[in-house]
Image (cartoon, rainbow, N blue to C red; front, top):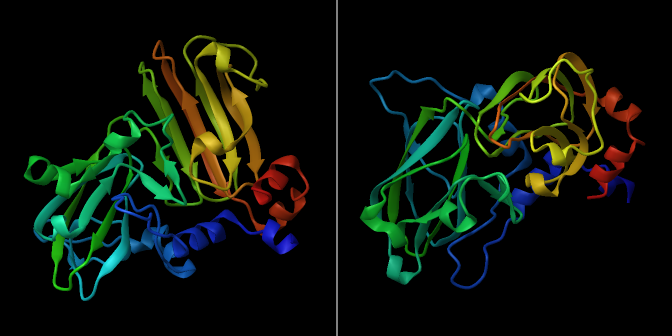
Length: 324
């Protein structure tokens, strides 16, 4: 029982992807697949990214379950029926991803499909959550067989995207061209690294933005400006929703921010470091903006070591993480 409680989110993530299953019936929206622990961990390693000369486009085969962190052309050719495939795409925090359909040779009438999803889906949970994404869920799925030549290019709203596909006949194939584009105001990010720093800015837009770190980390919030209250002592409040502009620190074991535990809310502007260790395996900084102000929060984060995790094993947040 204790072993089960102490399963980290990364291990759960490996298990989730390993045990992902295709939705039954005629659904085109597969939400899971298979991948090994070591493979998925390597996807978050910056060394995975390879640089290629600008005049050459990187090309390689696409696997039935794959992770892509570079630009290039990726071709899938079915050697046998492949009914539950998914490819995860990831870029830098300040980038979005475009996916182009090229040389598609599949049997749409026979049940084949290729569907791009704006975000990631794991175990039925979506990132960004429905509360934080600008589009309704049904618009985040773009199916090749439904749109055909009308929409050959799909662009993500954040630094992650994925493609689900199902192929029934050997020899069927398609190519995806993946490109990255600078996003001047990133909103909703999955970090590739367990340590780093980031500044989240919402320029007078009514939206919610999340920065997700799939590790237990220490967070240092160094600057917090929400435009409506200045020069007040820094503090966190039990709830800041009434203000309309606030930052949440969340923790939990899934990727859907709406299902994570609110650890604290911040709705008073300040400058100066504030530290917090969050033992959950998914740590999220989430900013809610009314659109009336330019909202800004700067923070750094680092991975907690095993000794630090042991010292916070009995706090409520850690218990919540291990039990959910």
